[in-house]
Length: 215
Ligand code: E4P
Image (cartoon, rainbow, N blue to C red; front, side, top):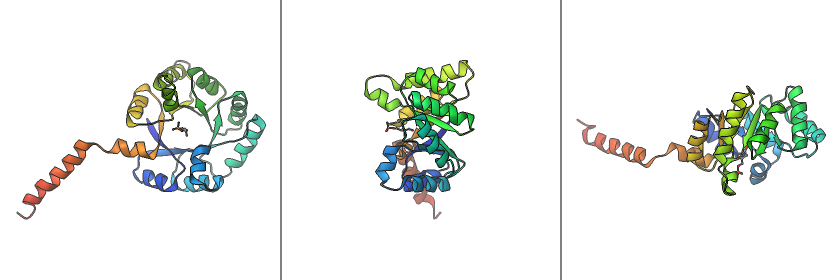
C-alpha cells in the first residue's frame, strides 16, 4: 500500500513530502483552479518536490486532443502520469498512450466495469472515486473491493488508486480492500497522524520527565 497526496498546493506537497510517507501526487483541474496558477508551472514545481508518479489531467474531450496534450505534458518530467477521464474517447486515448509507453491514470471511475475497461485499454492506474459514490448513497469501497478482485483474478497489472478519500476510515478501508494506493487530501493525512491518546501520552511523559530531569 502506498499513499499519494491529492493536492496541487505546493506548501501542502512540501509538508507532506517531508513526512516521508507519500510516494506520488494526483492533481485534477479543480485542484489546479483552486491554486489560481499556471497549470504547467504548478506541475513542474510538483515534479521538483516529489520523486514519484505525478498525475496531470488532460482537458480535451476527443482522443486525438487528449493524446496531443499528453505528449506535451510528458515533456515536463518523466514522472508525469496522464490523467484521462473515463469515457469512450478516454479509453481510445489510453490505448494509444499505452502503446506509446506513456503512463496513464483513468479517473472518474464509478463502477468496477469502468475500471475493468480502463485496465483492458492499458491504463497504468485507475482511480475509483469513493467519497463521491458514498455521497449518492452507494458504498464506494465496495467498488474498490470488486475492482481489486477482478484485476487480480484476471492478472491485469493496472494499479488501483482509491480516490475521493474524505476521512481516515476511507484509507484504512482502501488498504484492507487491497487498493495499491490511496490518494489523500492533506487534511486527511494530518488526521491520520493524530490521536488524542497519543497527544495525551506525550504530554504525560513530558510532565513526568520534568519531575526527575534534575535528579
Ligand atoms: C483523484 O485523483 C481526484 O483528484 C480526487 O480524489 C477527487 O476527490 P474529490 O471527490 O474529493 O474531489
